[in-house]
Length: 89
Image (tube, rainbow, N blue to C red; front, side, top):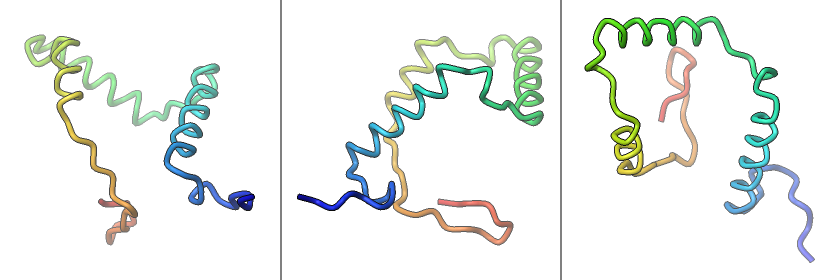
C-alpha cells in the first residue's frame, strides 16, 4: 500500500488533472462568488470599445478554436521569479 500523498505536488499527473477539474467545477457552480478585479473589468471595457471601433479586428469563434487547437502547450516544470517579483517562464 502506498502512503497517502502529503502534498498536491506528490499527486500523479492524472490525479492533478482530476483535482483541477474538480476545482474548476466547484468554482463554476457559483460564478458570482468568483471575484472579478477592477483591472479585469477595465480590460474588458477596453477590448469591447476596441472591437466596437474596429469590428474587423475580431475573430470568428471558429477561427479562435482553430488557433487554440493548433497551439502546443508547453508548461515549464518550475517558473522562476524575475527582478520585479513577477513569475516568468
